Length: 327
Image 1 (tube, rainbow, N blue to C red):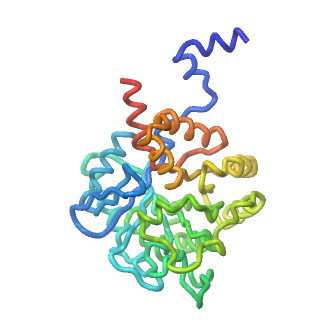
Image 2 (image 1 turned 60 degrees about the vertical axis):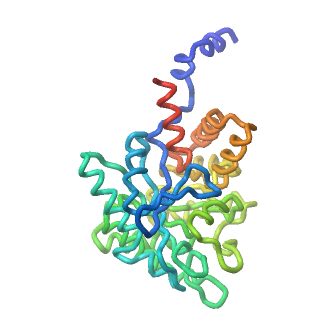
Image 3 (image 1 turned 180 degrees about the vertical axis):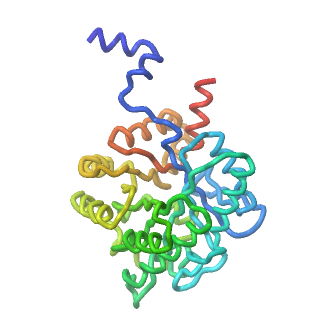
């Protein structure tokens, strides 16, 4: 016991011997991009997170470069929506435009930044579901080529990786095949492999204006009560060609994250989702929690459970706090 106490008495020793370390390069920051000009609007349910027009993206890109985060995950909010979500695959759609603008900004400064394009239809459809409809049901198979087209549009614009988030069966394979046929054999696909039909997504749907106009997404996202189903979903994405797999949400699913880590040798991501972020922000605003310590503890838990990297809205805040501690 004296040996343990000796190691705990010094901050440098504690850092040196800690089993789990949180590094900014292992954090991915989600960014919402919308049509318009001169827009940087805070999302009411997500304090500190903003929707940007393309011409204002340089602000968040500069912050991400300074923070040395691992990259950005881009979500597009189109000017208009329709039944099939056609804005998702327009060559000059909101995400391709954002990718090209960020690429240009970084090149002018001799910097690079990993850009991941989220691929889904929910932000682009008038009904808010993640695929096209057949009656009152999502038509899984009819939705697959549309996801593939959206992925191709993002990659042609310069995205480094695509991440299909709809949980359509076969979507990873559809995108992998389309990328390979177009010559993008080196572009990786990150599957939202174990994505639960969670109540923690509420603030995101506010941010992306993507709430379903009827029903819910439980017919194609996972039952919150299941773990073995997550392992089957991850295995399916691996077989379809996913380069990275993901568990989403994070906090209430650490057991799932740990179970997936034990089953896969692929890189494993976890998404620290909007509701988890907003809970911490709300509690800290009331003085009920120490935000810095709580965020550090949460991120540590994800890595301790087996994640290789974390997608989190806390990324820029955490990087700033870490820099302040080292100053």
